[in-house]
Image (cartoon, rainbow, N blue to C red; front, side, top):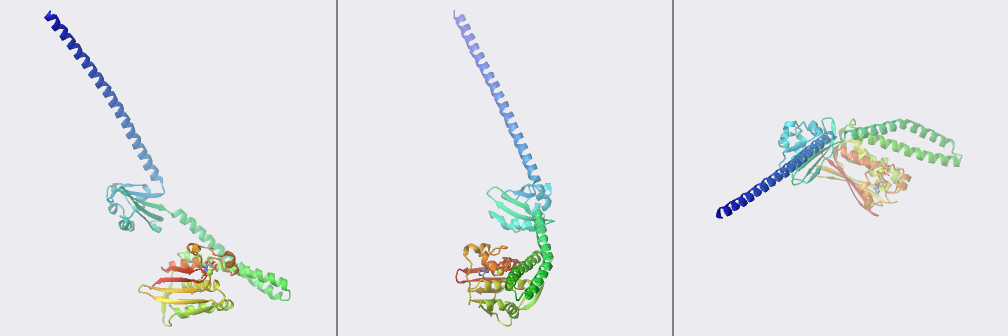
Length: 381
Ligand SMILES: Nc1ncnc2c1ncn2[C@@H]1O[C@H](COP(=O)(O)OP(=O)(O)OP(=O)(O)O)[C@@H](O)[C@H]1O
Ligand SMILES: [Mg+2]
């Protein structure tokens, strides 16, 4: 009996062990299947990621913008084709520091000086044969240098400038002939008041056109690299007095007094043509936008590295909201008033451009109803 009981126990124990073993192997099999499935999915995911990274890199290489991505320490981790070509970065330069990888000294200095800043944007710069706008941005993880290619825009701008310059030159002679003819006709029509009135109006319009052409030619000359800055020594007071004298008829008509508060012995080194364009426009404006019976004061100050020439008037002033746009081409505060006074709206853009070509700056201060002061700062040569 005991033997039978023992055999049954052994049988059941073996059976239990067998079931346990089967369950264990089944579980292992299921786990293996699950792991294989998971592995396959991960592989697919990795492949997908590799594909999208490749696609992104290919897309970035087609861009006409240059991209350099650096780690927080300045090691180059990604460059696209345009950046590599422009900055002479070879494919082996990845992982090197930016100052080892980038061969353009100016760009290296730019990154260096803005390395700890969040964002920096520079004026356009010529690298090799291209004009680029350089932007540097940085966050906790990466630093990015962006090079935006402005060459096509520049080409288009140059075409536009050339076109304006050519048209202005072409118009100059016919407009001068028309003016001469109208003036002769006016003489002939002295005894016909109605005809004379119309002719006067026509001459006024032709004068406006002549001024517009003159201003457009000056602007294109100032913009052209072929128009170099020619520095000569100029005696300041007589130079300014001559401009004031040329505008004296206009000032007398408007009963404006012009004072030149400049010491006799001051000489400055300057491009005469450009300086003349600046001062003539500022003094002309100070007379034109003054109140009848008002005054204009032209003064001079000298600092260690620069000189200041100011033109202050007692006119109507410029409202604050207009000041940011005042140097833009054709911008006028009161369009109709300026036109009536013969203004083209190009005077202050000539002032700004000429001052910049002389490496100076122009500032203005104005109070409505009280007057305006324009200040020109020029470096001492
Ligand atoms: N001294 C000033 N006082 C008040 N407003 C001024 C003064 N100077 C310029 N402005 C305003 O700025 C505008 C632009 O001046 P800008 O000299 O460019 O053009 P303009 O005088 O109208 O024409 P242009 O000088 O070409 O003959 C003027 O129309 C005028 O409204
Ligand atoms: Mg003007």
